[in-house]
Amino acid sequence: MQDSLWVFGYGSLIWHPGFPVAEQRIARLDGWHRSFCMRSIHHRGTEDHPGLVLALDRAAGSACNGVAFRVEPGAEEETLAALRERELVSSAYLETHLDVGFADGTAISALAYVIDPDHVQYCGGLPLEEQAQIILSASGGRGPNRDYLFSTVDHLHALGIADADLDWLAARVRALAG
Image 1 (cartoon, rainbow, N blue to C red):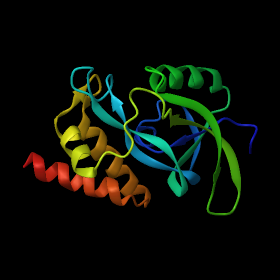
Image 2 (image 1 turned 90 degrees about the horizontal axis):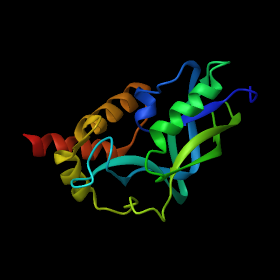
Image 3 (image 1 turned 60 degrees about the vertical axis):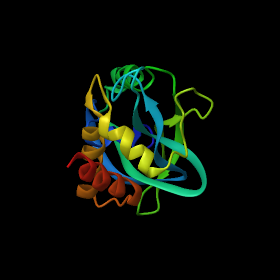
Image 4 (image 1 turned 180 degrees about the vertical axis):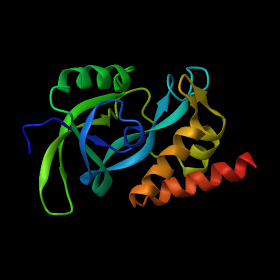
């Protein structure tokens, strides 16, 4: 199984991988959590009015449930190029390989994009209310920040993946929007 390229999705990759997928499985990544800890100045905000996007932020004792995607054989090079263009646009993410586990006890190494805590766009630890206010009003090249939040939450629910912080944020942004 490990001869293939696997990619771990925890945010928009879950609902828009952008590469040919041969297989997808719910997976768990220990030691990291999904967090709106990256200021978005391209896709969901601008330099003058940054939005927020999800990143994997290291945190001892935490875990992130997401989706491991096995890339269609033969599409590895084009997939890497597309992911690098999409995810490394501002160098706030670091491309790395991390071990993710499946419910059956097996594990694989998957390509993952994690936040660089030393990057200027890193904003870990923002209170949820502040995150909601930012997400409510920001918009970038790929549309409103709130659409990114809502799509991620909807797809996590469809997969049976719980994320209390994202659920709270989605409810709060909807309430603020009226």
